[in-house]
Length: 513
Ligand SMILES: Cc1ncc(COP(=O)(O)O)c(C=O)c1O
Image (cartoon, rainbow, N blue to C red; front, side):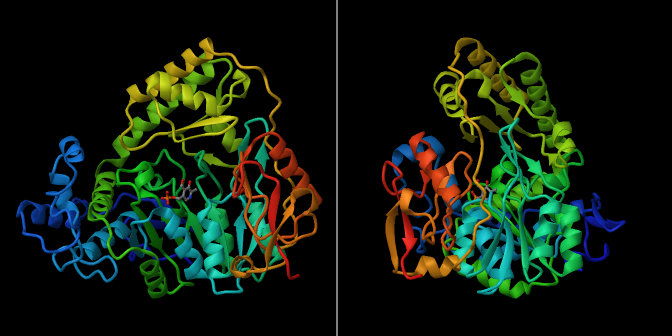
């Protein structure tokens, strides 16, 4: 059974009734070490004469304006590969030790540090689990790096259309029933790719999906970009590593305290060869990793193991305070709750605040901009309907208070004209005629006007925002419904990622079919 190890092999994890439970039996003395950071610190303090890359030589030639603001010391961590600091591609020393501590902390067999975010990890999971021509079940609401993974690996995607809640203007991740239906219909699928939590913190039934995959001998891959913290606080939903994912990737930089681009790929599979994963990750990453990012991964792991419970208890309290303040005091805004998600069969990472603003008559984009310009508050994401405030390891109660007070002030000060926006997507149950990679590599491509595109095979991806779901994918037959949707989208001036001109009029299609 994939992802299942006996508790004696997995410190930190105990299997109870077939489900991995969070158990805090980690060796804390061991986990309080940060071998890579300590080594880099020791190196930085010795002021070694550098005849290695990078050219700024321990920060000496860094632009003065930058150095005056951030200080010089930080650049002493910006070194290159040599024995003392170890190599990311062939670790035998401090990076190896740091990765082992990470694996132990998450209760997985192996962990690999990533310096190009979860984007590169997603691509690596596709390439590791599948061979060209294999098929894989994947939600259409996945991150854009998934399309890169599909094209690179040459797989046939079996798309699952995500469910939409039009009351909350929200798109869900794949459900257990959807995965089961897809596996019943396409038993040849080699793997299942799930995103959980979503950008909005919605967590799907991963344990059930994992058990199903294990029973059917399928590899479960999870994009857990937003879930590196879940494992360390019992108030938070179950994480992918506990649920039994074979491979999972987390953006350690998104919620925990790693520097941007710092992510980790966790391996816990009997169906995939770890050496293959390692080789693929190495093929996709730079040979000049930023050691500050690597050190920050080592420290973020130590920090969350030692203090994650306490810190996230207070982040959860602050976020829940904000949620209930918005729901009680700001009449035209709404922030969905964990109970509401539970009723829909999902769980919620309550640290995330998704604020629906449709009743204000203003779009999420407009409020995001007001927050930035007038209240000095920058959000991670907004769309027509919602604002998403992402809390993290460093969030304090005062930040959430400032946010909700600003929203209250905006709701009193501004009133837009009610619009009849509806979050919808066309039926994506169309034919996948060609493999996306074959279309991508083909020169037999031309452009046709949107209204003449019906029946053609798409040769590009088109993703309207919102909802941020690709409605056209290379290799898929373009239907009348998809065309009509795109024509309507273009008439409303909705931004479509992938369009090459200001106005969406043409679509690239394959000619030789
Ligand atoms: C669900 C999801 N997956 C993957 C990514 C990519 O992560 P990274 O920025 O670490 O490359 C993101 C980024 O926002 C994301 O939201």
